[in-house]
Image: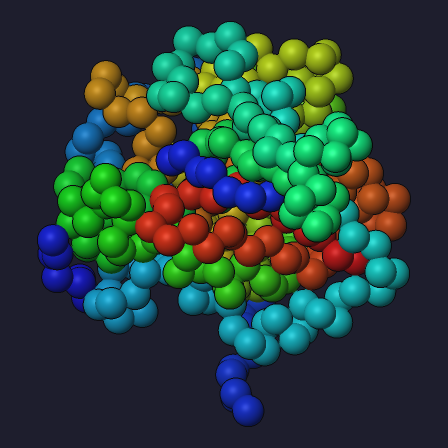
Length: 370
């Protein structure tokens, strides 16, 4: 069923009865995924050249994975619909030790924007923090006429300059956005459809951490390594965790930690990176996840295996075709260490977007609560 066609920068002062979600158990590691060809991992010295994705490949994937109309012709939140009230109650029961782990980078001048990269920055800068009133002002007495001594500030920042959500108005498939809305619904006044504010009460549920790098025996996956469906299934199996409908999945490649360790973001924003291979569209569809986030700049593998004129092909399908909200630049080091110690890879996940009307993305402070 298809829905009908229809036609950032931020400044701010600082009783429902729902069926239980299905559980998706990891298939045999020898089983081939339907419609997916087996390939040698890029880590192998004998890696064959991979076929470059064409526009026809994207058109076929769009037809295969299209969710338009699945939640009605007026839906604006996509796969976040998979998480039910019952799922949230069950996720709350996962809190056992009261430990809260932030998955966010601090928003400051030390962020990844502005680092050396072959990819155009498109105007993204690190946050600019400006003080409007200071303690020095208070000490001098110049503001005593207000009857209160205080400080105040503001931030100027692109909404996707640090740890962030890609909203459903962020990427288009040709002239369409999620659920078949016309891409012209995003105007100079913001997104008239699929604005990030529509998700403000939705980013809560069961979080599942998939430490792919650790599962494959590495501190960090190599740049250009495409994470496969088999990698994701293997990681879940090794960690003893089953995927359930409505999960919020966080994937670790190790790339962000590598940048922090070497003290440089060069190559990170738009550079070569490990990430989700195009074939994992099948995994996203099969698991019926609510949202997926990674510790890289762009979630999918870079360089892209595409013909000229196509950038970020996984984005082309996941956001406007499948309706999946995507998280990027998640700082998962502490979570990875904690999960490795206690062997628990599921938790209560809380990560609401800032309800900025008409925004196509949002900074976020994702919390894993164990």
